[in-house]
Image 1 (cartoon, helix red, strand yellow):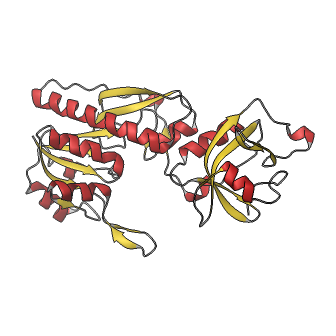
Image 2: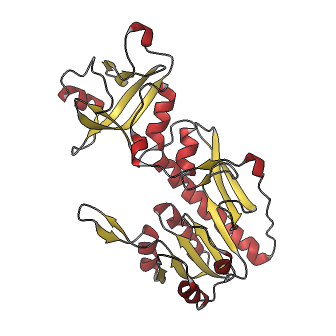
Image 3: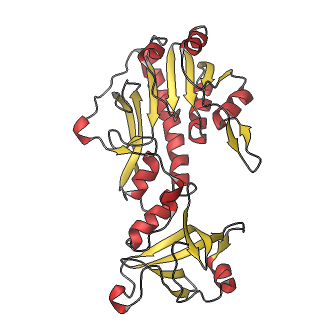
Length: 316
């Protein structure tokens, strides 16, 4: 089958590779334009663009999908559009270029967490289950009929990084199966329940600032959801301190009635970490990083941090 693959970040790479490995002809990849990255802010192609070049697949990276871009796609005579994390909604004129329509892999159990950050939102909200859905590309965001889905049980240890890797692998499998069903004419979709739809917004850098007045379980969820980006952070002695790993102890802590305010370092437990009072329970900081420094184990950080116990972590 002649496929146009649309995607940009690393989560889409296994799907691109799986579609190629399944014997389909990927006529081109559609990806976002190169963006500034690194200290020099040079323009860097997307991970999907780099993978396509390695696979010998033409790359289209337009700023917009106007008449000229549609003409370029039409010249490739694609039959099916396959999408994973492209980040744009396709209009009817563009979709008319694909006789078999389009498929989109989305890392949530639709209609829950429609939008661009479903993986962090599942972790932030401490969902017990998430998953991956393959839907028909529809005019409205993430509202298409669902052709396939697979659940993922969450145990409270996942980070966005680890859950993205798992979702990427599952999405690749489901997309290949869905393409095969379309080729065989056996595909059938289930309409989404609009009354059950929930939505997620793009994350911002500012969201990474830890609110120590929140419960320990919520802070732990934020640390995991914001790893690796935007990263959870606080301030110690006026310096920005990234929290790379932590573990909640919701039943522990002195509580605000004792005079120990949220964000106070109450102890350094050699087996658990740097114990910080939260709005409800304690949280153990296990791995940390000062701005401009290397990541370090809590023991190394504690050894070099004067006045740590009793200090109040928080905004600069």
